[in-house]
Amino acid sequence: MAEAAQPTRETRARRRRGGLIALARRRLQRSRGGRVAAVLRVFVVLGFAGAILLLRAADGGDAPLGGLVSSAARWVAWLVGAPLALAIAGDRRSFDRRDGIDALAASRGFSLQSIESARLLGQS
Image (cartoon, rainbow, N blue to C red):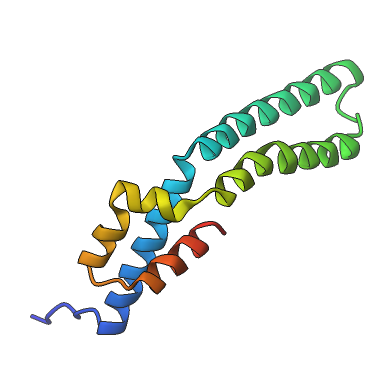
């Protein structure tokens, strides 16, 4: 019976970095700005979906939606992007230090530079 291939050192390191980036992204999503952005995203999507349904019901299936879709894209970018940008602009480093994330990551062998890099990549 063939043995299962063990992940290489590089693969394990990549997975660990990916986990640290996922942690930073999750913490950003759970911040106040991240939660506000999620709620506003739902409101914008439901609002424009309702507008599309009303437009289709009133004008039929041939109703042009191009202007509505581009307007929805602008609203989503501003209403979702603004609170998220404000959350990113906050002092994430001090929040992580306060919550013990830096100490946890350091105990797992991550340097301060890799933690900062993960924060940066978690914002993208």
